[in-house]
Length: 328
Image 1 (cartoon, rainbow, N blue to C red):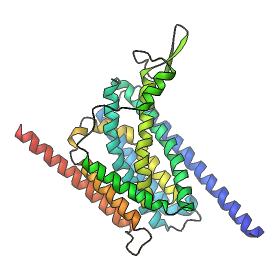
Image 2: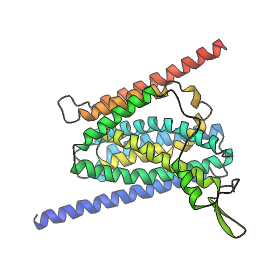
Image 3: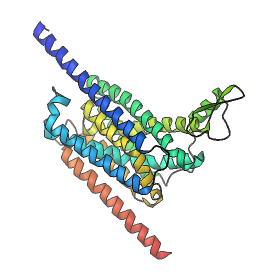
């Protein structure tokens, strides 16, 4: 490598670091805004809907910036601004769809540990922060693995198809989450009998003890890892551009707390959610298998398929609920 190539490589590396640094600051700003808007722990339905719409609109605004400033986000990418924008939107909607299923598990955790309503926003906050950190690590590792060992793409594809089949075979959600995190925490620290507001630890008679909130956060963190094992390979089928994968995950997770409070009373009514997610996972797995072949599925087709399947699932669930209501 000559001196000109070395300088060019270093300049490109510095540009990438600066871009990720700017995006990291933007993420911190958005997380701070999310903390501010749920201060006090009281989240009304109207407020939750408003902020869900806000986060959704913000993701599409960010998609517009990708279109106009893609050379800044990824100066050496082979993607055109149009391809990058479609890839981001497809990845975002995919991650958002998968995150709805996560809300079922959050609801089970809150019921299992009897988390008071006003403490749930903070528990969800810790869960979102944990998910952001864990997914950033998994995206970095996954991108490096794919760049070094391209055949791992086919392992991801097989895993996604298998996951889709398993989802189709499930009859529903368990009533409890059996998690190793609780057992590990209980072995290390004594647990108080009741919550101490948002505190993870407290002192009783001069002794440090954990609160049930720490158990809840620990269980959510472990479940975040399980969720990421599905969602990270899925989005790599849409795009292998690390920045787009990271950005789609960040924006999908940021609106998760508000979305939970919108959907918590309706989660049991989404009867066709799991079949829809099963179809999507199998489709994404097939897309990943075909990525280097003459039959590769264009990302814009994937976007249309994703929107169509989720729309059918939502409309079907609404019609099924109306049928049940009439029969009562």
